[in-house]
Image (cartoon, rainbow, N blue to C red; front, side, top):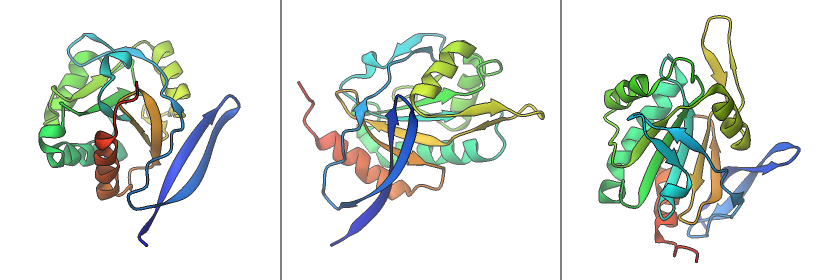
Amino acid sequence: MNRRLRVHMILTVIGSLAFAVSLAAGESLPKIKPAPEFTLTNQDGQQLTLKELRGKVLAITFIFANCGDTCPLLTARMADLQARLGPDFGRKVYFVSITVDPERDTPQVLKRYAEAYKASPAGWAFLTGTQAEIRDVAKRYGVYYKRTRRGDVDHTFLTSLVDQSGTLRVQYMGVRFNPDEMLRDLQSLIKETKAP
């Protein structure tokens, strides 16, 4: 039987606990908990909430535009997945990239960043907010970040998949996740019936 190793995060009141789960091919992804809500500002200067995205499968990442190493790699992988999802992208699957550098990442900066990666605005939002808003949403998704002396931002690379009913289903640690596995997981969640 084909078995896969996937890293999941359970977010608890006392912090984040990571554990590995081996799932058989075709098995449903576990339901971790309701995805943390947010209200942030997109690259067009408009507010976007998690509730507005109900009915779509979400992939939520944390990046910043001035990142010179891992953020571009993560965003490029997501852009590749955008293309591979075909007509499901935007209609059934939506990507959300949240900055961890709200001081510099204005909507205009994020718009240029999105355009550089050919991110389709029909299915991909790049979000910013106040320092307090970003700190809060990052913490609730289990993402740690801190500005370095050089002005960069060290942060946890965590990509969260959320189903159509707003339930957190899986979180991938790092940028070296298997894109084929994530594509299968996204397609698996697309096929699930929306919870009432």
